[in-house]
Length: 145
Image (tube, rainbow, N blue to C red; front, side):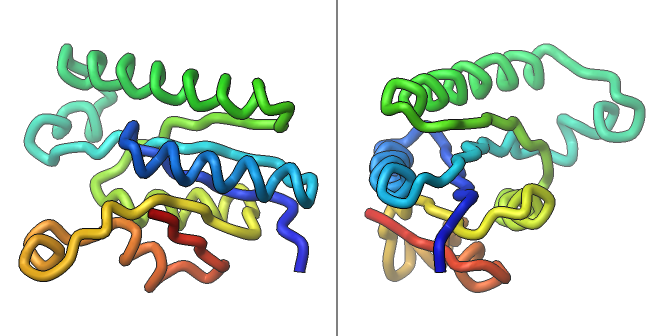
């Protein structure tokens, strides 16, 4: 199976860089298109007016600017490698659900993402976006560390 469209969720971490590097190798090997996404996780209390009426606030706008900068850096990294790339900022309350929905909406064939590799109590308490995507995605997911 060839992967024509790879979705790469990032969060600005070192594991995101590892995932991007793996996606670059794959895309070069099989001539895939890449879409890199970042999710702006909305806090229900801070973003209440934003969600209901579209009324933004300074915190949301500062976060958006920061995340768009990370996306632009990622986009440049792929472009420097000669890879066709799109970048999208997603918004939502549940990060893994936004990633899975984006994969479906964009008709991606593969999700390549990093994992921090937390185990034990830390994983239980903090959860794992990568684990949730892996468990709920209808398309293949490659987790890299």
